[in-house]
Image (tube, rainbow, N blue to C red; front, side, top):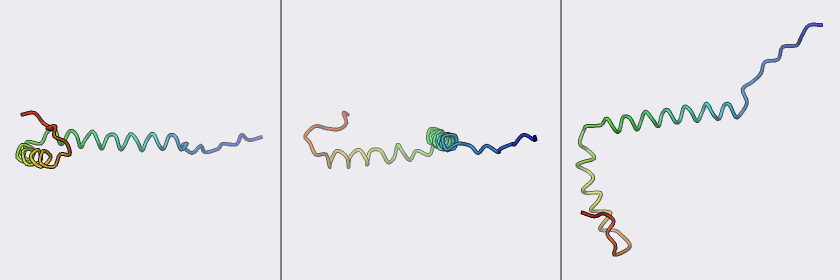
Length: 66
């Protein structure tokens, strides 16, 4: 009798893990890119964003301390 060789397909769980790894790596690369950004955009945009957040707060309490 010849042994039957079955092709084993990766389980759904293994596929999910591989997909999560790919997504996690993409997120790591994006964070790395953001941290390396020296364009100055965030330093320019933050004061305006902070002002708008403070102007539209729902309580008397300030969101940011200066």
